[in-house]
Image (cartoon, rainbow, N blue to C red):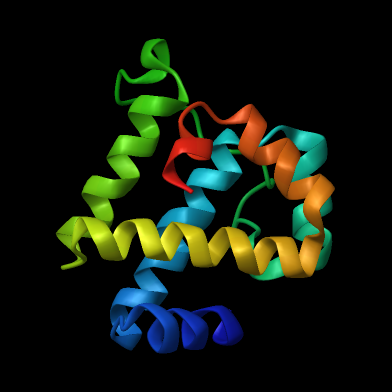
Length: 125
């Protein structure tokens, strides 16, 4: 997690608290939205993105957005990051950096599967 938070601080200009929060918010999102087999491959090379507690399965979506799919939850991620003080441009740059880091670490095939499986994520890149 340190490498990724340092990268977000250096490349996006986030504070340490913002970078840590961004990693936490985005990893929660990926753990909810990524297909389980792909998520397992991602966790194998990026264990910091795995859930901190529990069975490793994502929590049920109890906020009523399940019928809107991943796009509504992606918008909620942006809202959470903006609540941490990030501008929309910083949110976009943060998502791009996290995806780029995942590509460098987990490989294109794994990340492409995740990006394809999550509605709207391709457009955020």
